[in-house]
Amino acid sequence: MKIHLIVRGKIGRSPEGELVDRYVKRISWPLKITELPDVGGTVPPPSATPSRDVLLDERGRQLSSEQFAELMGKWQDEGVREVRFLIGAADGHGDALRAEADLLIAFGAMTWPHMMARAMLAEQLWRASSILAGHPYHRSG
Image (cartoon, rainbow, N blue to C red; front, side):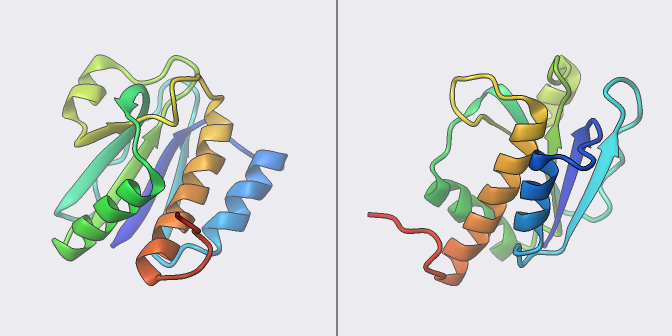
């Protein structure tokens, strides 16, 4: 299963960029990052079918790390070829994109800068892959 992060804004050389790089290197799934401008640009179509689109959105579901890992494992077992995670710019996503998504998720009720959301998503993808592999990185009680 391929992971594709489609994100608004250039992260460049920054503390957030370093965090993203740190976790992306550890993720066992093949991963691609597509950076779009803050405004404009076209979201690329899925490169494989079946695929799933997950939007990070303040109105989304709040999943525990275990629930997120379970969902990723389920999609992998079902033969989903690509999971696309979309992170919007400061104004989030439009209604049309939100309506077409397979899932909306939120990292809590607080608003996070999109560069931090990217780093948090990369960490959660690493955590999900480690949970599924039985790696001790994730310590649940």
